[in-house]
Structure formats: structure tokens, C-alpha cells
Length: 94
Image 1 (cartoon, rainbow, N blue to C red):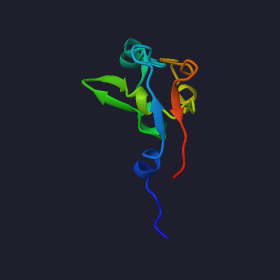
Image 2: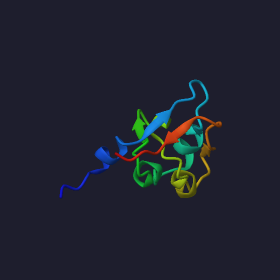
Image 3: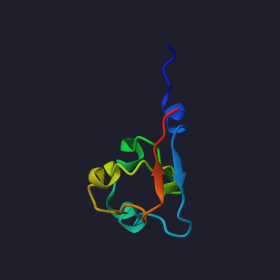
């Protein structure tokens, strides 16, 4: 039996994108000034966060809506809310 890796598992999910209404907003001012840990880069199971030119960039269209990033951010630099009704992650199997 072949085990699926994380990219294959994530490919089973569908995301209904709410264009222009991101449910994750990063305050990069706080990140630059206070954050040495960059926990969001490591704790997100979907790998939503990347660092580009010293700024944290969320690819919110891949978010699994688990909230781990908000809990892990020691400086409250992330504003994370559930997407509006009808939008967000749609879990499917097979």
C-alpha cells in the first residue's frame, strides 16, 4: 500500500476562493520589529506561509483553516478569521 505524502493529501482538498477578501492578514511591521522565531513558517501543516524579502506572505488559498498559525504567533501579528460562508476549504476524499 502506497502512503500519500503531504502534497498528495492536500491535492485532495478544494478551496473556494473569496477573491479580494483574504481571511489571513499579516502585520509585517510587527514581524520585522519583534519576531525572530518565524513560527508561522514551520507550524502550518499546509505550508501557507513563505518569507519573501523579509516579509511573511500567506498563500491563503491553500489554508486548511486549522488556526495553528494564530496560536503559534507569539506577537499576535496574524489576523486570522474563518472565511465567509460558502468560501474556504472543502474537504473531500478520493
